[in-house]
Length: 497
Image 1: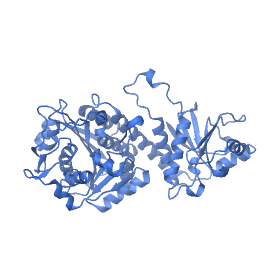
Image 2: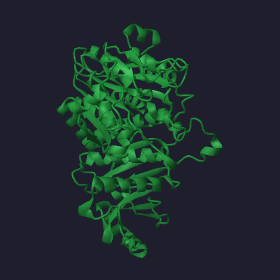
Image 3: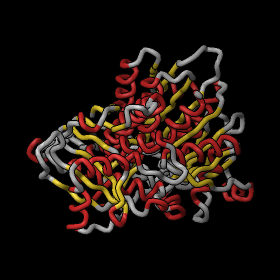
Image 4: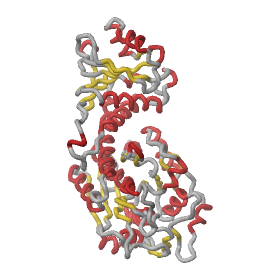
C-alpha cells in the first residue's frame, strides 16, 4: 500500500473513494461540510434519507454521485463529537477499512483524522489509520491456492487530506513510522501463521538472516547446538532434545549509533511448535501451538522496524528457537537441568518450556551490558485467564522501564497491564532437589513464571511481556495479530528521541 499526505484545495480533489466522518444528528466534519455545501447539501440529504444514527462504526456507502472527480463516498459514524474515545475511534476505523476493502476502488482519500479524539494527537490518528487498514487488507497467502484465495483487494493507495495551510511535517514523520510498523506487523503475522512443518527453528533463523541482508546496519548471526552447548545453555538445549529439529539462537544486532552506546536488548520466545513434551497438551486446539513463536517473530520484526526507520540507537534481538515434542530423549517431569547461569532447575512440567529457553537467553543478554532487557513470550495460558485478550501482561524489576512500556502501549493502543513480582510468589518455586522449580503450582501462574525469569535478570533492568492472550486470535478469526510489534517499536522510538 502507498500512503501519502495530500495538501490541496477541495476543487482539485480527485479520488475513487472518499472517507468522511459524521456524528449523530448529521453533524459533519470540516471537509464533509465544505463538500456538502459545494454539492448543494447532498450529503446532508443522504444522511437524512437513510437516517443512520452516527454510532461509532456505522457505515453509509454512496456509490452514485453527481458527475465529478469523486466517484464514491463512505460515510463513517464516529459517535457523539464530545465523547469520541480512542476505542470508539478505532472501532470506526475498522468499519471504514472493511468497507473500503469491499469496494472496487484502487485509490482512496480520508478525512477521518479531522475528528477530535480524547487525549490523542493527530499523529496517533494517522498511525492508527494505517495500522488498521493494513490489518484489514492483510491476507495469508503462503499455503493457499489461488482458487481459494480469490481476488485480492484492489486498493493500492490512500491519501490523508489536509488543508493547504497545515504544517504536515510531524504528520509525515508519523506516517513514515506507521508504514514501518505496519510492515513489521505483517512480517510477524506471516511468521506466526506459517505451520510448524514450514516455520521450523532453522526457517525462523533464515528469515532473520534474510532481513539482515536488506539493511546494512543490521547484522545477524545464528548459534547452533554445538555453540549453545559450549556456552553452557543446558536449560535451553533440554527443550529441543525431543525434536529432530535443531535448536537455534538467533542473534540480531542493529547498530544505529556509536559502538560505545549501550544497546536495548529484546528477547523473544521462538517455540515454533509446542506439543508440551512429555506433559502432552490436549489435542483440542494444539494446532494453535504453532503460534508459540510469536514473541520471537515480534522481536525479529521489530529489529526490522528499527532498521527501516534508521533509529539512532543500538538494539539487539535475541530469539531462542526450538520445538517442544515428546520423545524418548525428551525432558521428563522430575529431570534436573543446569542453566547457563549455573542455576539448577527441576522440571516439574515439561510444558513450562518457554522459561527454560528464555532463562539461558537472558543470561546471554548480560554480555551486552544493556540499557535494559525486554523479553516477550506467549508464556502462560494463565495470563488469558487473568487479563483476557486485550492487554499483554507486564512484569519487571524496574519501575521506570515498566512505566515507559505502559506509556508506549497507550500511545499505540497495544496496551499492557502490570502485575506484581512480590517475593511471596518466589516461595512457590522452591524445589527439594534443585535451586528452583520450573513451575509454581496452579495459583498465580503468570506471576510465578515472571518470578522464575526474574532470577536470571538481576544484573540489568528487565521487563517481561506475556503475550499469550494478544499474539493471536482464536475461533473464526484465527490468526496472528502482529502484537506486540507496535508496542516494542514505539518503545524504541521513544528511546531514540
